[in-house]
Image (cartoon, rainbow, N blue to C red; front, side, top):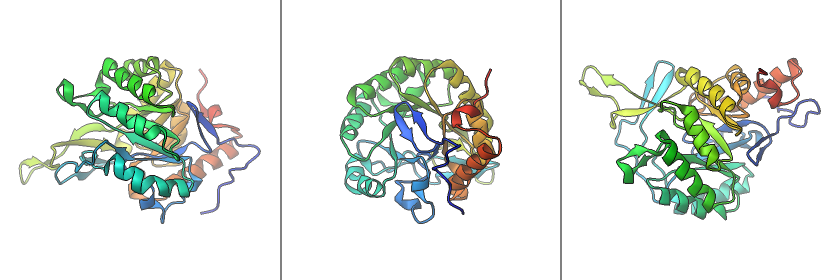
Length: 310
């Protein structure tokens, strides 16, 4: 694959996401690129705007029982259960490699209580090599009956305030699509001090094994990702980009450069590539090249110029 000309005098790929400056708007999504090193032999990570590492919690998590992944038409169901090594081992084993290889690193954090989110932010704030935090608010609030933080404007705002209070890094709140009004949640986290918003997280779904007469996934339900959810994600990005003043990172079914352009036109300032990486590891590089070629052919000088003007 030819090298992308990132020094073009006519095309400005650099974007500012709530104080986080990226050399280009293409990121790898949390949960699909591990901690970076897993893809390093297949993808030139330094060509991308950055990566969002696998979600980290205070303590290690084993995740859900298998089966944990099931392919669907145009998509993927996963019920990994947020398995991760925990913050202690992340700090000890992973961040050093990312820092040495000069990978722009956004750390996705999760918790079962507001206190856990706050502690995570405190511990990561002073760790060199981290560019920003992405906050997963699709996690269950164990103190309030297990309802996800992101399904309520009040709890979404509480998490946002706690994380902002605990750190100086740019804070990106990752919104759940499993809500009645995505704009209500977006406005709540904006008011609470979020620097940016990423959306969408996976849609809840399930599959049934008709021979065994039971759910395919060990956890019954899973998160649906891939091209099947792109129309929903695109609609929500459009709505949120026109409801808040926060920069938006679009996620959901982006598999081609044409998909990426749609998200920019809907109002996203950056994008994350997720399930496509599992199908074709170099998808992100190909998408970035396609974005550059499209901008060059159509005389677009910056990502901002792609947004539909109303």
